[in-house]
Length: 285
Length: 292
Image (cartoon, rainbow over all chains, first blue to last red; front, side, top):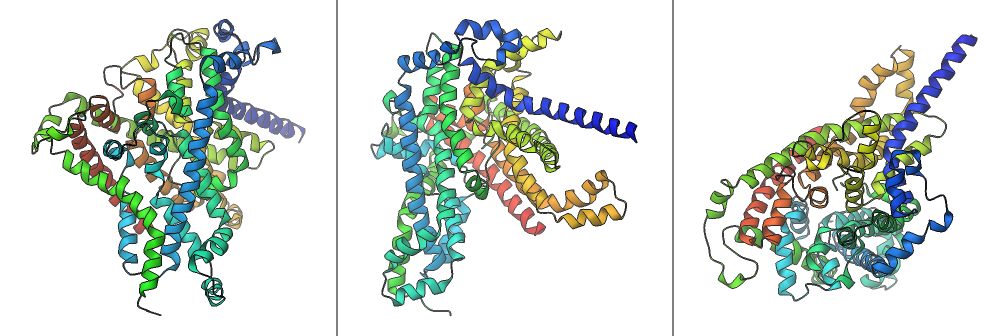
């Protein structure tokens, strides 16, 4: 009996040991990124061959020096502001425009609804990556290249989000709309005063996923922006990473700065992110 | 209930839809037609007015273009490797965190951690970690007596390295999807199996696998489609090199159309690519329907 207990204990320890090793594989890059930003450039290389690689500078006074340097050297604050601005305005527009369309498909009996809906679903097949160049020529034609509007405009209307809102609105009982109508409320009022407030979960899901999508987007803003002062964080990162002289600790500081907002969002809004269960998420998104 | 729609309802319906429809029209529908049209022209980005209809000549040229041919094989290589690697990894991780144990939440968070970093961030981060001269990984390898590896600077290893980095980043997300599927399987099915003398492995084969199939299929198909669209990782880590070994189809669309400004040529690649993806999507819908 005692022997068995001992064996079980050994097994448990072995299990946890292996799991910790596996967990390390997934977190060591992030850990290295953060600690490397918290030490002088020379130490980053010196520490590589020891466990010190995973510790910040032993002198806490050095911890935020790199951040001060990189913020001085590049307009990190501007890039951060730009990304937050793009993310928030993209999320707000996504919510408004897709919920309006979703509501029409769910609750309004207009002619041609089925055909339009079917055609819209067919659009889901089109890989957005293949229309980037015509999107760019259209932007150019509209005279919007190198404007903030160009960054957010193409992705706002999303078949996936319209579909999500439609499914949410369909579940709301018809009686609620009927009774409001009898009370003399206009359809616009019903939408903004009754339907939208009832659909907070859908709004949160679309809002959060849109913000994350906009934050992580790289190729489109890279194409339409030439003015550095309008760069999003992701575009700025690659620029900073290629501006000589390149200091690893500064690059890691910028990577860390650009990741912190996402960590906060994932922690605060994890419920809605999982609800979205979009077809995304792989190295590959 | 089959009422005819009134004028008022039509006005309201189209009114509510119009912002979305207009945007979808301008930025998705029209561009699709533009791709089809451009692919038969010699449109050069800076001289749009001089474009001429050139028939199939772009397509003829494409199949003589070694980089294009290579980009197809590179894309397929990535797809063929990422599917088993990432799916296997996410299934394994889901099984691990599905077992009740103390501190499980720590493991779940750890496996999910790479997901919260953007593709650009993980690409740059791994670029430094995998540096052939003074990267952390090679320093570690040499310490345990293994030669430093070129990873991203060798045409033989670069694509496999990108497969690894991509799977490493995405597995945590799919782990959560699969875990959700696993936890939807009623516990009493397992209890009944246990009474009938099924061991854990048999339970996995005969209960978990079949009941998890819809979720697994969804994960498989979304991974498949998004794997075809690989671009950011090679763009940031290798610029398609070395020797075009990581040039993918979507990257080549971008490079020919935007960097080299040959919009016509690029559009014909886009058209071929869209056709490929379209066929896969249609096959996918068939598969999903059969499954239901």
